[in-house]
Length: 189
Image 1 (tube, rainbow, N blue to C red):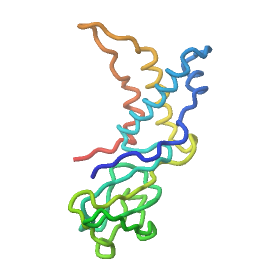
Image 2: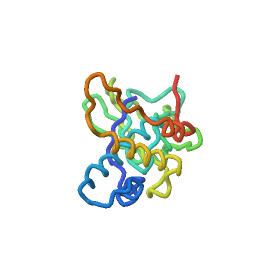
Image 3: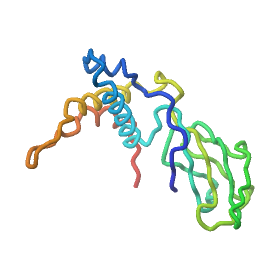
Image 4: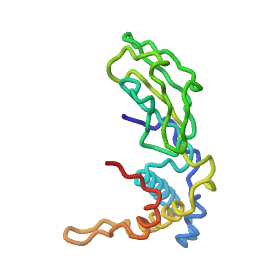
């Protein structure tokens, strides 16, 4: 099921001041680089854990309602269903009340009893489901291990940002970063 970001997080789990303190950078010349590295590190940790760290809104696109009555997005932790619409054969949208869905936070799934919902008229991408995912609204809501992984990854990238020549080894991802995120990693078969 394809998904795309509608609303990015309002803040990063690690502020520019905190990142600069961790890096021991006292000048402002690299502020844009450091902020970009923090955002990239957050994106990397989110991709590895399949978790939105700070609350953000995503759109899931489905062809039909699942027979099981459960939608399992590959992103968590689920917070809410924000909006849903079903498109008919002429691409006219029919809004569905988000309260028609049950968010099972423990299982990371959305209860969507297909028998009670209008079927899409389009055979492809006839359902759009907007969800909110994330640990919370503030940086303090993110698990400390994941914030530390962002710190360490941003520091690694900051210290190894030069281009490498052909034949020279590329700086590998620190094992400590993988160790920090391993308990939050979601694997799939």
